[in-house]
Length: 514
Image (cartoon, rainbow, N blue to C red; front, side):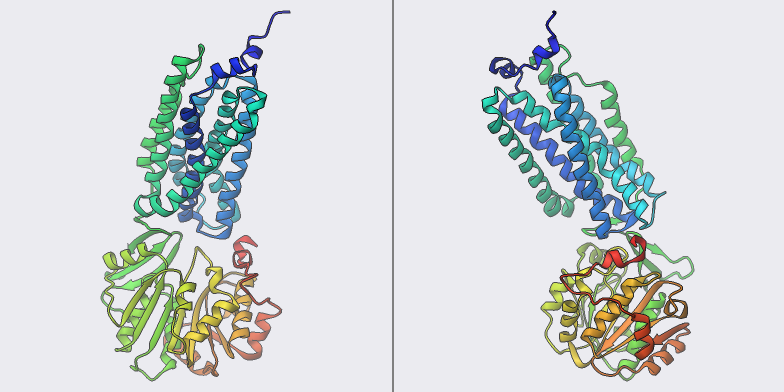
C-alpha cells in the first residue's frame, strides 16, 4: 500500500511537528491579532447597526449572540480543517479573507441598513448577522490551526493549547478595553473597522511570505482575489452612505434644518428625531410631548416665577431653554450621558451654559444619587437609549431618587414611548404610583383607549395634582391631549407589574419586541 503524503504531513511526532511549527512569537502574534480583531468587530458592529435599529438590549443580544456563534463555528471548523489539510496552506488566506471582510462589513451594513431601518426584531437580527458572522467565523478558525502547527508531541498538548488559548483571550481583552475606552473616544467607528481589517490583511500577507519561505510548496499562497476584495472593500467603505453627521460616544448624531421654519433645527440621534430647537425663539415648541410637559410647568407656579429644575436627559435642551425664556431666573441642571451630544448642542444649536444652566456629563442614575435632597420644583425625564427609557431610570429605586430630589410640592414629568398594548407605559405608571402619592397620564385619546401609541407624559408628585388645570393648559396650546387620573388611570394600569432594579424588563415590554 502506498503511503498517504497528506497523512504523513499531519503526523504529530516531535520532529515532524517541530518542522511545521511557526516561530513562537509569530504564533503568539497571529493568535493575539485574530482573536482581538473579532472583539473589535463585535464592539464596533453594535455601533455600526445602531443608527438603523437603535441601541436596545435586543440589539446588544443579537450582536453578542451572533459573535459567539461565529466564534464557535469558526473554532470548530478551523480545528477540523487543520486535521485534514496542512494549516500552512490555510492560515495566510484565512487572515487575509477575514481582514478583507472586516473592511467590507462597513459598506455592507450601510447599504443594507437603508433597507432594514427600524427596530423590528427581523431587522435587528439581519443587520447583526451581516455585521459579524462571516468575518468573525473566518478569524476564529485561525487559533486552532496555529495550535495544530505548534503541537510537538502529545506530552506538550496541555501547555501549547493553554498558552495559545491564553494569548487569544488576552488579545480579546486588549481589544475590548482598547476599543471601548480608547479607540471609540478618538476615532469614528468606520475608521476603527477599516484600519482593523487592513491590519489583519497586512498581517496575513506578511505571514504568507514567511510561510512560502519556510514551508513546503503551496504554503502561504494568498489568492489575488482576496487582496482585490480588501482593496474593493476599502473603496466601498469610502463611498458607502453614512447616516452620521457626528459620531458620538453613544449615538450617530446629525442636525437637520426645518424646511418650513428657517430657524428650526432637529437633533436626530440614531433613528429618532430627538429634539427640536428654534434658534431664534426658545419659546417655540414643536413636539407635542414637549408642549405637554410645558403645560405642566405652566400650572406648577404663577406665570413668570422662576423654578429650580433638574432635567434627566439633555438632547437639544429644548425645555431648559424654554423655562429660561418664560420664567427668567430659572435654574436648570441637565444630566446628559453623551459628551458628543453636548458638543453638537454647542457647535450647531447655539447652547451656552451659565450659572443658571448647568450641564453635567455622566450617567443620569449616578447624577440623581448625587443630587441634593428636597430642592427641585421640577424634575423632567427625557432620557432614551434607542426607543426606550434606560431601564435603570424606570425602577422604584430610581424614582425614589427623583422623589428625594424634589421639594415637598415638586413635580416629576417624564416622557415615555410605547405602542399597543402599552405594556411598558402601564408598568411605569404602576411603578410611579408605588412611589408617589399622585400620578396623572397625559396622552391622546386613542392612546388612552389602547388603540394607538407614541409619546405620552406621566406626571407624579406627593401633593394632589391639578388635573383640570393641566387639561386647560393643554387645551390652551391647542393640544388634543387628555388627562387621566384616579380610577380611570387605575383601569388603564390594570395588573401591570411594578419595576424594580432586580426586575425591569423594559425592552421586552416594548411592543417592537413583544
